[in-house]
Image (cartoon, rainbow, N blue to C red):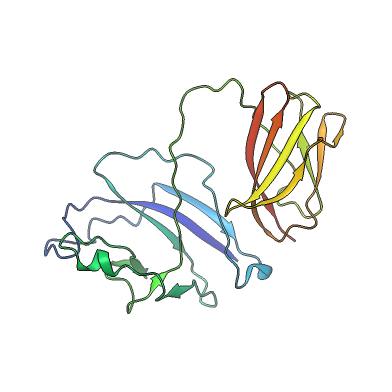
Length: 215
């Protein structure tokens, strides 16, 4: 099943949830960025991740909404009462923490005290040129057994570190196992998920990229 990951602009100006002028009428249903994520059966009851393929230019004083959108009536996106936003709700400038869109209509009050268990992780994008960073395009993606990593612009000696999205080291090679100019990485022991690969060569060049493992 495919779900969409969308970013919307919310043009309404308001101080917080207690502002009587708050309105979702200016929250467009036309996303400024839209990407798809394929949800496989084996992902059931697990946390999954998606990284946008392109950076998002963001303007000061502009509100944005990041949403997971599904038209599948048999898919339930997890909600929970566990996240505690009580402090936010008690403030005079309390901000929306979850919005709900049903049939194209937005609500700024969420749904019955539950919040979606979705986490957005943001980081600055460096627009300068990093001459020590090497762009690498591994294949196949998703990978199920052997991942091939082209190493044309990197020397043979170096190390590989693989991390899950929580930052835990799950795989490593202190000596790169290359076949010619291709690094072979056995990912068969890794559960289906997205991982961060970091390659560091002895000449100072490095590359970081994401790989989806799926079966």
